[in-house]
Length: 229
Image (cartoon, rainbow, N blue to C red; front, side, top):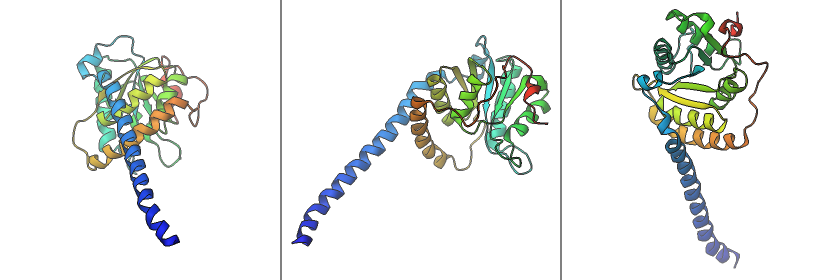
């Protein structure tokens, strides 16, 4: 009798689980698509970004740095694009935001050095040592560095999420993509980004504080104040 009832109920359970799975996947893809649709109009060309007025800074989102301190391909392209925008007078300051949560790993030091090696004055290069995520980088750009209008530089697949977070946090933001080449593993990266957009969609609703805040360091001041040496 029990086995008979189990055989009757089991197909229904399977159907319910399949329906739930379809709903969850559809919701995840839908939120991701909404994020892209909502922000795509604020992704600009280099030339159009340089025409913007009263931009406080170019926010460069961090990425992997190799053990020898050299930036990864993706980070190198973000830095290259940000330097080009600075040299085109798109903004007077660069804000390098990345992971420096451990003494042995320092994204922002490598990012700053790249800009200085390109001839940018160190006073125009700010370091955000606690940019542990896209959300935290933008939150700190507003609250710690007091930036109100920014240009975000990263790869295009990542820009949609960054721009959505900025809008949710009340920052006027525009994006310029740094896709100078094809990157290994990009298909998996694009798939993971769907979930990342979903996560930051809900994070932007609740607006939690970042890991660290601290005293204000106005982006209009001297970037040397943020040096770690």
